[in-house]
Length: 342
Image 1 (cartoon, helix red, strand yellow):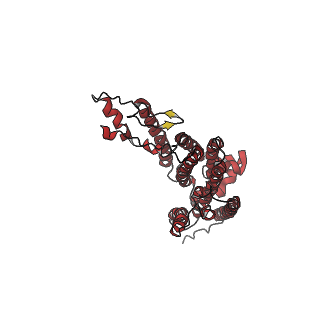
Image 2 (cartoon, one colour):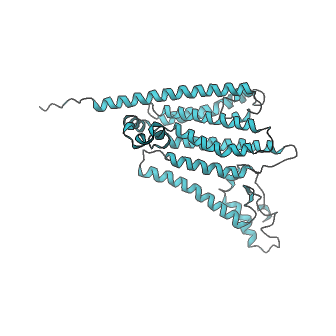
């Protein structure tokens, strides 16, 4: 069974994916029933997997238990989405409160794998931590794209919300902001922003506790740039879901996919590397690849530009919601002609 004994851990957040592969337990199980004098729990046969510095791969019972807990956790969240859609097919996949808890779970789980990076001879500890942080941002991008899909209601739901929001109980209690944060049918942009705040609250203390300050500022700026880009994508999706165009969900998905994939493809085709043309990469979904090479003025310009784009998009979204709500109200209150019976 020696060919099964491998250590595929890399001590960065991608180790989390290994927990979805039950075959990783085969070396433990085979060796535990073999007549080999070598212990299956020895260092050479165990998976050197750390989570918050705990060696969960040292023993089969801890490793198997962690895999079961991981499957149970994410099965629970999948079930929450399926159960919600089963009872109301027109509802969003998750309500806003569920999304906040999901984000907290996701960040804590992945952060546990990022704390103890590999340290080759040519790399210092802070650089290795920064690379783990970059991998975390990649996973976060995937998470938040899923949350944008799960939290963005479609046109009819938004139309009903815009028309009746003054009657909502949450409006009477806490105002429009409370409804945007917790409401079932309100636009999802603010909820995505709240999820970004939760993720940043979990990751920022870890960044500030890095042993040296060399990569702290680039990491915090990358976190901020990543957040503004994700809110930009959420605003674009919500605005496009308000269109009357059929298959608007496909249009929204295609537009965001283009925003994410086309800039790095074009820049790579033009041989514009993040380390050389860092100011251009700051406007992409992968700004974390160039932020450590960018000047402070370039980062400031990128943040101001993205903020202005967010303001314009959300002003347009507000106008569209008001327009949709007013037109729906007029249609509802307009007198209908009586049918003439001959």
